[in-house]
Length: 211
Image 1 (cartoon, rainbow, N blue to C red):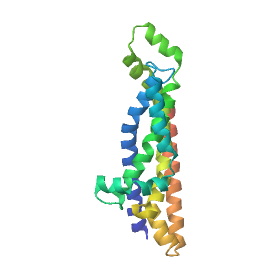
Image 2 (cartoon, helix red, strand yellow):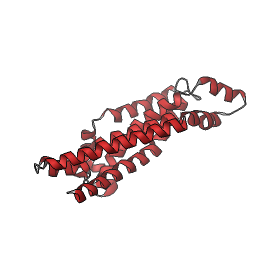
Image 3 (cartoon, rainbow, N blue to C red):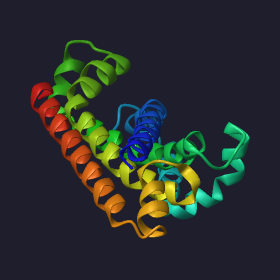
Image 4 (spheres, rainbow, N blue to C red):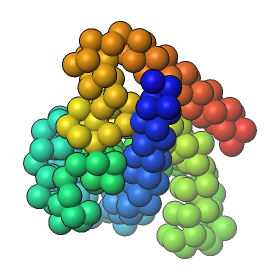
């Protein structure tokens, strides 16, 4: 039993951290564009901001289980199959990108206007203000957002496991629910609880250090 659960947990870790890494990289781009073109941004542009904001909101509106099914053709195109750990990373990443983009945008736009004006008074241009003021001041909040994303993706990965994605969710359903083995459900639940608590503790420590 424990070997099976350990293998599944490693699959969960691969799904969660790979999709988080990709989502953070890809989600940072729209977050920067949204911050720049916002009404209170450095280069306001209502058309660009409203269009991109609408796209982000649309993708955030899909329940993950529906998104998982809708993306099956796209998943096959990317990884060549629709089931397995690698396949589950695709919908997990797609669901995470708009979430982290909005979190990053919110974090960036919470930067103290006084600090921005001070940088501008010293002759900093827009790009210097963006990266040396907005981004630098927002790092603790952005890290906090990443931690919340990881925790959310743990739940999503369990959901993906029920549709052949592997991981803890797959073991819990196949052995625990369908196989009527309560021990699998208990062990899987305890592992996920400990993992989430550990991730949150590390996140809190990082937030305090960076702040």
